[in-house]
Image (cartoon, rainbow, N blue to C red):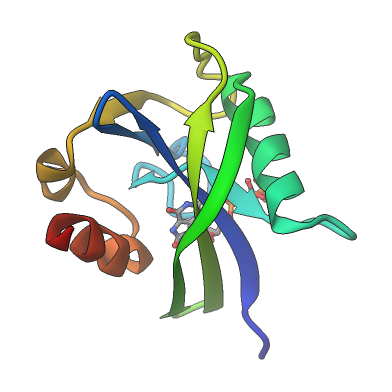
Length: 128
Ligand SMILES: Nc1nc2c([nH]c(=O)n2[C@@H]2O[C@H](COP(=O)(O)OP(=O)(O)OP(=O)(O)O)[C@@H](O)[C@H]2O)c(=O)[nH]1
């Protein structure tokens, strides 16, 4: 089975990174993650990220360089996660499709239950 292509934003502000909590009723609900989502139809990854951040958080972003690519097999199938460096273009965030959001230092990330596929991303951040 080909992997599900997913985009995720490494959104940085004042040396902190944004994580969001998946709603309980969603697949893998209750886990924290880097905001983003699946690629739709003809979208580029950058377009998908911008759309997802708008839908989930009412936030406009600038998408920068790729930070990491993660291949992970869940029991329901594989995902390929494209993680991009991103910057917020405004201050306010609304929890439209997420339960909560937090700005964390890299050191705080391991204290949160992030999705299993995100482990290599956290490790890379900790190494830098
Ligand atoms: N956005 C995001 N997805 C992740 C991360 N890590 C990870 O394993 N995933 C997986 O990638 C998939 C993303 O799907 P999603 O359900 O969030 O995407 P979406 O918003 O387009 O979904 P929907 O339109 O069905 O609600 C999920 O299976 C999720 O488990 C992450 O850090 N960020």
